[in-house]
Amino acid sequence: MKKKIIKIVVILSFFVSLLIYFINLNNGSLITKKINSLKIQKNKNYSYIAHAGGGLGEKTYTNSKEALINSISLGYKLIELDLMVTADKYIFASHDLEIFNSICHTSILSIKDLYLKDIKKCKLKNNLIFTILTEDEINQVFLENKELILITDKIRDYKLLKKKFNFENRIIVETFSVSDYLYAKLIGIKNPMYYFKGRIINKFFISVFRPKIISISTKLVEEQNNFLKDYLKKKNLIFAFTSNNKKFNDKYLNNSISAVYTDFWDIDNSRCYQLKSKPKLCDKY
Image 1 (cartoon, rainbow, N blue to C red):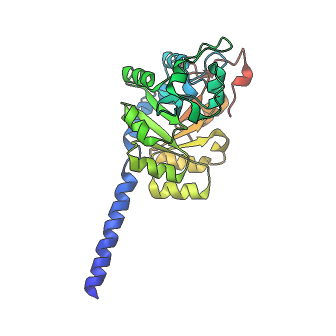
Image 2 (image 1 turned 90 degrees about the horizontal axis):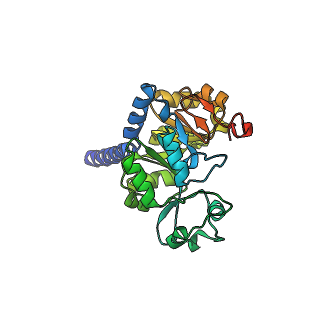
Image 3 (image 1 turned 135 degrees about the horizontal axis):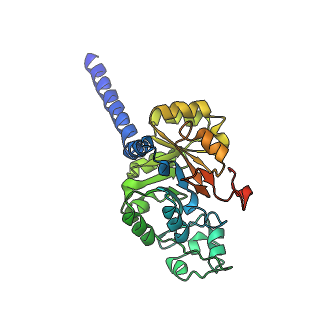
């Protein structure tokens, strides 16, 4: 009987140790320390995230090479790109197929029918000078700019993501469910980000698996303010989407959130640069 109890204790201890190891495996701790350290140095460039590559003119969601280069020139260090995968397994940046079709002279109905050759044949439409970013161009830009951090959205093929990009230590991968988050960790994604919807089950998951990085809608920040402040005190990161609104950004940045996705933000002067010409663009959503 005593030997049986000892055996059970040993087995339980093994599984508890395994759980603790898994909890601390690939939870974004290194990149979190890096960003927090830069923010402590009052580096505002790490408080704003260029949403979908950043705004270009009055346009949003282009995920284009032109938007990316423009955001870099404006001082952004955190760049978010919506990533999709072609039928022949090439990664490219686009929010969705509808926007891809609007930029290119195409009418592709399904991502299953989109191939790399279609991206290469992409023609400009309505005089929009946007270039679709492919995996090679993304690699090139981020390898040339080693201070940049990529935040990805949409993509679920984590194995392909690891295989295609050569700067994985600087990639934060947003996951939209518990299963996606755990799968990303198992695959070896070093910086998975958990989408926090404010529910009790989300809070329970965070308390158990202790992700270092979470995302949240700006619509929930006020409602979840106390929880977010407590989470930040533990030296974690919170990225809120999306705001070009000065009042919101001034109130919550470095108070309830670490960084905010934005389209038209002048980092140096802390203002929306579309305020005079298109004030409606300077809001949160």
